[in-house]
Length: 184
Image (cartoon, rainbow, N blue to C red; front, side, top):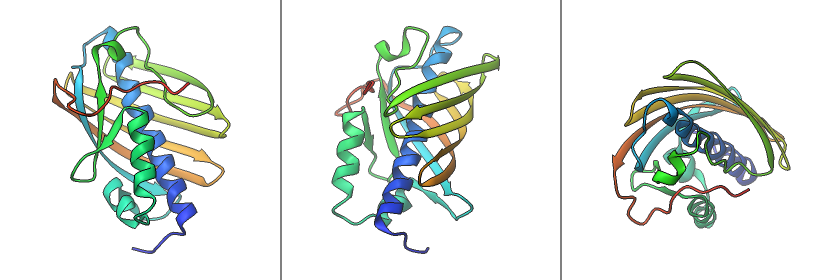
């Protein structure tokens, strides 16, 4: 695996987490037709920077300088996310985040998000944000109240990142992972 300059790697991790955050937050919109279980969710993701190699979040984090990891972890925790011991992502969706008919957005900047679904299990989304300027799109498939998957593409000043993610409900208790909250 080639080494990325630190700024490029940090931008890639940030774009991947932005895509995952939107994926995680898109699931509550499905609650109007079928309830997702509140609690702790595990996410596994693979991302690709432009036409580069596909990497898991764990691989990206191993490529970061050790001094950058606390910054990434603090940013995640502030948004209601944590890194799992195996290098995945954990998100706490409490009952409040699953009520209301729309997801609590945690995207940075001013964002417009548009949802579209052909049936209750399949959604597509697109969004555009200012400060930072990023655009994204993707699809989401709800398999059950305890599992869903997504594909996404995020584009911004540092290029584009695409990825795939799977989400699985872990437990009713989130333990020490704080509930996902909006930063807007």
